[in-house]
Length: 144
Image 1: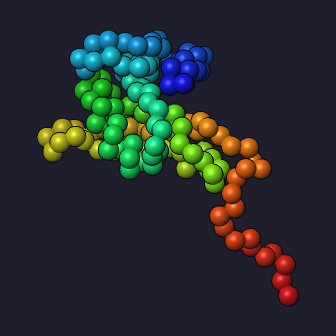
Image 2: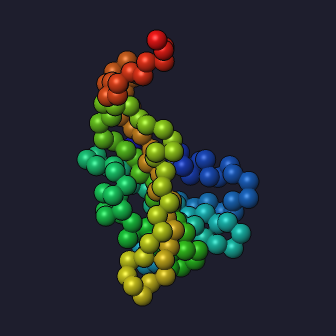
């Protein structure tokens, strides 16, 4: 499933105007393999693609994957993307698009420049609307 997301993202990025070369599975970026690399102006932007089965909270994703994503910024722009396929259970629905995107600005050490990583979670294991559990009280809009 992770590779399907990577290929869908590659297909999408390849059609975007203003994006230069889009490459998949590129070696020797920060001495490792990058899942997807694209050019914007003269910068190389790296995307790391992951899947998460247990905990797709931003706190967990920061702890597990942010350091790796930030390391790619050593070779070009201090900006990257962490794209995570969320395969956790969703009994309360998927949530809004806005709740699935976060910009994290951090560094791995006090001597390293800060980098921006856009974290995007893509919902998998979606449930049908009829299976979503109600977790909030109904608001009474009728007065009196």
